[in-house]
Amino acid sequence: MSVPRSITFPLAIIALVVAGAALHVMQPALLPFVVALFLSNIFRPLVVFLRSRRVPMAFILLLVVVLVGGVLFGVSMVAVSSVNSLVAALPRYEARWNNSLLPSLENLLAAAPASIQDQLHTLRWSNIVQMSSIFGILAAGAGGFVSVLSGLGLILLFMLFILEGNGLFERKIVAAYPKRAEEIIAVIKRIDEKTERYFITATLVNLVAGIISVIILSAFGVDLALLLGLITFIVCFIPTIGSIFAMGLPILVAFLQFDSISTPIAVAATLIGVQFLWGSVVTPRIMGSSLDLSPLLVLLSLIFWGWVWGPWGMVLSVPITSMIKIAMESIPATKPLAILGSHSFPPTQT
Image (cartoon, rainbow, N blue to C red; front, side, top):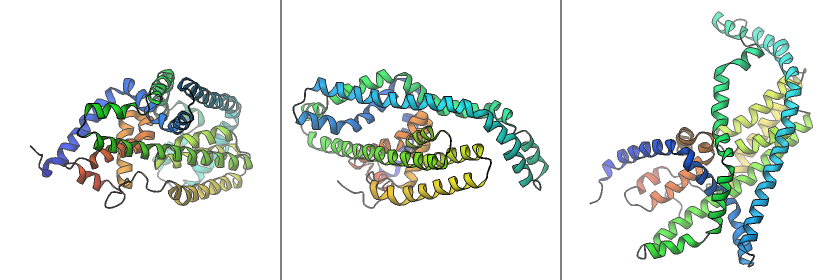
């Protein structure tokens, strides 16, 4: 019996909430597998190319492990050196904030209500560091990444098994669903193609954005340029808010570092201009509307998956939502919802 379309939307909302709650509870067990599933998209073209050249699968998987280890080693070196630099610079940042920036802010808001001025007086560096709300935000933001990184071995193991079984799943579909195998395989191929293209393109685009950030910050002599470039590369995977954070943190460091106000303003103007050009002109031309998601759906998915899986959910929100939308397009009862969530009309068929 078919479900009336009048109740399709309420049922979809209820199913979404129930599924989100279940995924939130299952995060420790399920998230490493999902991360490995999407990371495998980055390495799949390499695996397919080497297998076409009759390279043994054991050698291919060993190469993947070496590449992952090399990336992690490079990131750890940047992190260690940056932490040492940050510890050395903190006393200068504290003096700059307490003796210059905070008094300037108080003078700027001298005509503000007394309640606001009282709040400003409490914003000494030591008070800011000790604010539990900030630590709570940092803990919440880092908690998801730390929990996943602590299971890095499990993620790598999942990823190797996924890459090793590349192409085997389609044969299982044919054996399990002989009558609908062609339709199911077509949907799976569309999902694989779109997510693979998205992750490879997004990785290259964000890598270039991180390199540009490092070049700009190094040219102005801003501290922690390598670390800030690495953070830019990572947070740009988060739609909408990632680019804001990528600009805000370097600008804050520049204001804390330099005594002259002209240099931080020049840094801010350069970063904002380049980010606007890169994010609004270059990136859309490179990425296109490959995932065919409306901006509103991207924002809603960012909120939803951020609630479900924290920072990693924000990073994966766009490809996961795209996968769901492609699956909904193949089901008559949910196809209207997929159309409503599309960037184009009707949805592009590829």
